[in-house]
Length: 203
Picture 1 (cartoon, rainbow, N blue to C red):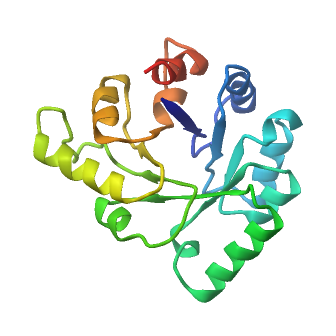
Picture 2 (spheres, rainbow, N blue to C red; picture 1 turned 135 degrees about the vertical axis):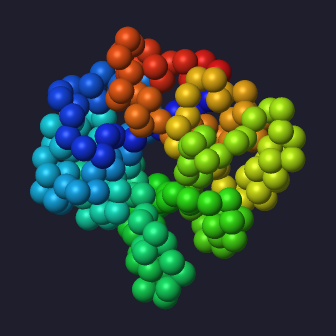
Picture 3 (cartoon, rainbow, N blue to C red; picture 1 turned 90 degrees about the vertical axis):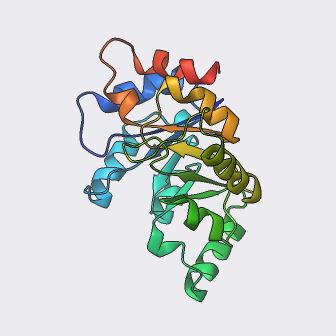
């Protein structure tokens, strides 16, 4: 199962060192999500990561940093993924400049994923296993609806939000292409982040 790790939204102790260890353990994609950081703070974070690993980084909402540092791609905020002409032109220009640039986004509901008409390299479906969601293998109706929308999306979809090892059977049964992990990686008390993601990669 493919695993994408989100950074903590906040500053954490020795975070860049832990990120480097994740890359050394085989992590293919790290998504830098620091909504309260300035652009210069995000840039300093990127510069602290060895150049050999920067091509595995997706940055949240900043095309310029993606080009400056040769990053893997950009995660679009909701306002930037609308189908307005200027957004479409901007995405087209950047894809022409760097055809391999990954563009992804997050949908916060099944309805928004279902209704999406735009092309992305992959997307996240948020809050799949939050306190108000009830997907399980024993509830076929909900699981079938989830699977149907994922299959019709024609885009790789990753489960995000509250994902833990016990959810792996549902993730696989629903047809997700992988998982996005955040708090489960950074708040794990007894295992290194590398060991945590290996649980999912082996599934």
